[in-house]
Length: 47
Image (cartoon, rainbow, N blue to C red):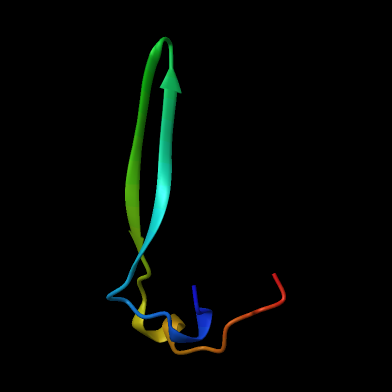
């Protein structure tokens, strides 16, 4: 993923896992970046 080109229209793929008292759910998900102001700030690439 190119972090210099992140925008609010893209979704990032992820994995969701939930387990509680014998109930187990696993699914794929899409995460969308939000916040017009914060998307315009320079990205911290040291992580």
